[in-house]
Image (cartoon, one colour):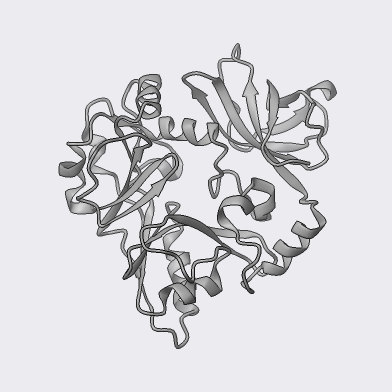
Length: 324
């Protein structure tokens, strides 16, 4: 289903996001304060525009195990994980953020991807005893930062993560429940901490030909010893050769520039000048409360890790996320 505007956009100071993030607040008027509060383990982030899918039935985990890049056939209750669905050629099509409660697998995904995901899962059911439901109309995702002492008892399911908790809350109770969670932080604050943590996001760090190796998703979303799944041949081949065509880098941007390079801005070797041949593109950028302007970019694998770069017109230095 298409995401509708969050009721939390009526909170004081709320400014709506852009693009697929338009249904939730980008910020509430104090971007850096919101970041600092999240980093300190206070407040919450409205992620209610994300899609929610549930899978129930006795075969749910063994069935998902056949479709996903992650090993989930014996996933313990309450243990969070993430997984990908790949094309036959190994390109990333969906990123799933999962937790199983012992009876139901709860999944949240990027806004606008739920319909295609559910259609694919329905097509793959065959004779398995599973029920796939688009639960976006009934449940909303809210993020609590690491260190938060807020009770999650109102949540139908909780994903416990090193950097916080993802709560699946009844959508009808979103406003009432989060009123007890402290001051809200906008999506820009959440994104700043995501980029700082080098965590890729589908549709931002990915394009139509991205494979998991390029983004460091092998470490968190791919199990290299599990059996066959769609795209597994590409994963195994590139892992054995150790030569993905591109790699994710973290950029420290020149703080004297007033604008941030947008998604898709071309990245070049600084020494080649603004007319040099592009070696990649900016995937996400933001202003961080401590680090200043930062970004993630996808560059050609053979780009020197020591090279100074230009992100659009902004000078940048790089940190390695995925080695050459």
